[in-house]
Length: 425
Image (cartoon, rainbow, N blue to C red; front, side, top):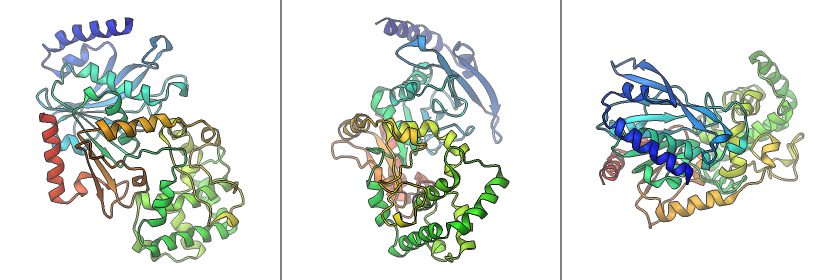
């Protein structure tokens, strides 16, 4: 009750103050919990703002401490909607989302807690859960909603898209619509729907070529690994979290997932010779090995923790490769969750189950965009008939290019029409 009263006083006081504000910098200057820098867009006289927003580690217990969350604000005007872009990881500078371009709206892009510049001083993952993540977004809405009074729309890509769905579930009154791109909803640490997807995606000849490539990479490892070790030494990469030989095997197993997630060019793949130099070059180009180097394991550490405990993930089906594996255990499918300490954590299925139930029964005004080649589409959301949301699965597209701009013109018009309708209701 005490926190509610404090929040109410905060809202009433600042609502009356903000209602008189006509300049965004005046507004920002009034915020005791926000510091900011102002920058000019290269192609415009208008400014954008890099914000540092004070957030509680625990939104239910302020005595646990605070951290500063990075966000980028693009201000168009107080008479346009606000798009809140939910990142799943660090925030790569400022950029305009498709949705803010379509709506000609304001935008605030929010870095995920425990990533990039938004890391608490103490890395205590007890505060890294979807309840706290969505409360961060709600707090930002509370700060800015009194001045950006027109409808708010959420959007996000990949893990950021999943985050936007959870935000809609936890705080449905905050937003009028959502566009979630390539957003997975996995139900376990090893969601086996991905295995079935990889068994069917693309052409049989392409899938066979991938299997042949993986098999040769494993069989010829003694000739390939020394070449790769020289390369990673030259690049300054280290493999102390996962030893190089294990990382190599994981990289080979990851190859099929990575190929469909970010490439999908079967014509080029079928033209690859199965000799050692050609496969070494291909393996390097696909970057499958880099995912298991120390910098990548460290960077994605918070993500792996979330995957292990609440968001779910995938593993590697080793049925066809068991006899060629030397360093990985073969008694079960290896997990893509790293390191092993994270994979051994307990997964709470109620989080994803509750979201699925909410989306099926209450998840209105949501556009889902998926790529037909993307393995994450196996964990995609198909709206039920109880809601008005729509899913678009784009043929020939993958995780990196399944966007509204990739939809045919008729469906683009439909998406834009739906968004405009939902924010005007």
